[in-house]
Length: 327
Image (tube, rainbow, N blue to C red; front, side):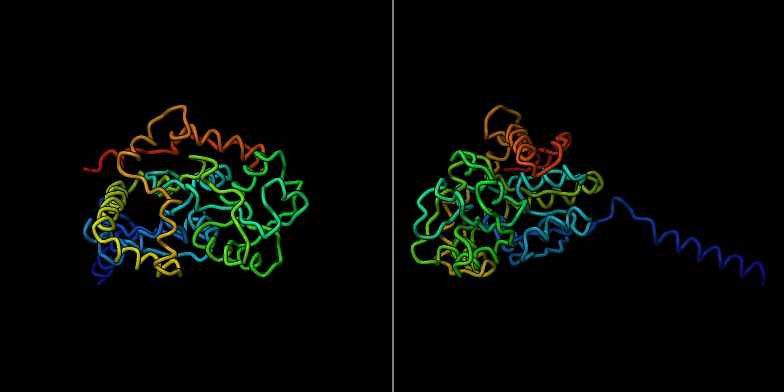
């Protein structure tokens, strides 16, 4: 009886040990986040058209109403990957997060905007005015770039920190003089009669690239799933190209705007092709090269006191997966 009990106990112990050990070769679910931005809505298309499954990857896709919540979710381990900008990734890395960029989704070429009420014709006119913006994010960065170009600093204005959707609503309600917003919230802000964009990301080429960013250890431990995600992205772009109206309907619905409004975002968001991804990941000394852009943004973040010190760039960019895609 004692021998039987001992044997049973051993089996239970083995089963318990087996249940806690993860087979690194076994498929794993990828927890990916995205939020309201035209360059990231294709993930919704991928989900609805079964393109993740086509590439053999199981995905838990989470949409965040608040972009900053998605940044926090990745930094705290509640996501494996997130769609986010380069400067926000650098801010997270500066704070100690270990993240790796594996794909360029797009470059903002006008869909990030500083929008002002009637009577404010230029960025220089913002002196002494109140501007609503989601502090520490990409449109705060755009605001600082625009102020510097106009010979002003953040100290010359009053910043009202609000989430982007709330910032746009406050602007329309007349509670602030200007707002920093990204599409589709630019549509909300421009609903104020006589308002206009006085600065956009088109004024700063290459300054706001958007990426698929993974937690660094996940990339090392699950390269198969990461490759499947990158493959799915390019399959999705091909599907959108072949089914433009259907794709716009999916993305506009997710963004809470009309199909017609969504079409106006095309010029302001430049989706990167496979060739553009390869070029962006290639080291260089122009704004088109991610390593150059990262160094420039890092220096600016320190200068603007958005971070305490420049983030380490080693291991930040991994072109392996983009290079492995068969065009």
